[in-house]
Length: 449
Ligand code: GLU
Image 1 (spheres, rainbow, N blue to C red):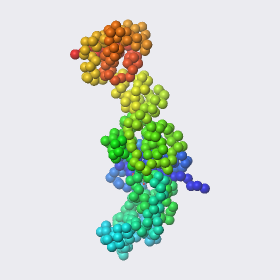
Image 2: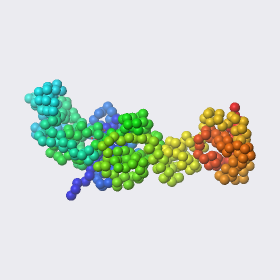
Image 3: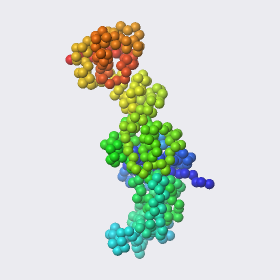
Image 4: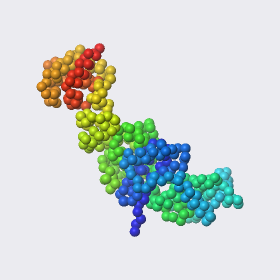
């Protein structure tokens, strides 16, 4: 019987979950869900200074927001320390590892004597002191990478790696391999920055007499300019994406495509289809580019798939305000993120915004002020305050004054919104209601310079 697919996401909690980490989490999750296997979450918290409860919570919070659920864990690597010690003692007892006082200088001297390509072989210390190094067997060490293919390392070229310090604390590559082995992990999917760790981890598997997992090392993430992704490129972490008003479903879609070879980065694929279609073997080896403009575009598409009720719920949660349904309805076509909403439509709720330039342009010239006054009386005379009536009234003012429609619309818009960017003018007037609209027009006129 084929064994169950078991993947793990193993972040080091150093703060917010960066986008590269989110992509690794997503790919692991997709593989787990499409195979009906399990996703294990392990927190690599051995750096006690950085692994604060707050930093751990940031990781969990980012995964929850992305709706990437896990089946086992979170397992604390630190809490597995007794197990690491047990395996370490066992390897030493079986002479698969040994204590040695060899220093970096000794390694250097060894290479001078045997040549650079010769893997360092240490001398066990007679009194059992010093760091623990793993013995390297003969033969080849083969990395099966589902993205990069097979890479073979000649064991004789590999230094016998240190797996524990003289004080007994184990090293990262040892702990990872023991943890992955104990958890029955079948696929290790992680960033390319871990490529050089893989042979060392394979040596640990060999010492344990265990079959290693398959590996998949994901290409680096760059910004749109081809440089390493950083804050300069806009949002660089899941927390920042959330604050920037993206929907988790859009973020999943976009980051799934980062490096997924044969799919265009503008393809809309809902999560259930991602689960079905995702193939690790099609992930590119080349760095992928995170382009926030594309994510913005994609997020807009996701926003427009929401019903008005859903959009309202999202906007109210994002802004912490209530009663936004009418504003949501008239803004839905104009926003690409949840964060776009308030600057566009907040005036409906909090009064006109302050935009002195717009005021200067549209509410100082006597022509514009006169148009505003005419518009005000035309609107106040309407029987029904409906879209058609409002539009006809304002166009009528423009015709009567022999000016372009814009020279009536914009003064009215700036009077009610404070600025020249708003949802549709007629729709905005209706949402405000006739009384409030007229009051704002009066106030704008009174404040003229
Ligand atoms: N803890 C490592 C990191 O956050 C990942 C280790 C692994 O996936 O093997 O970079």
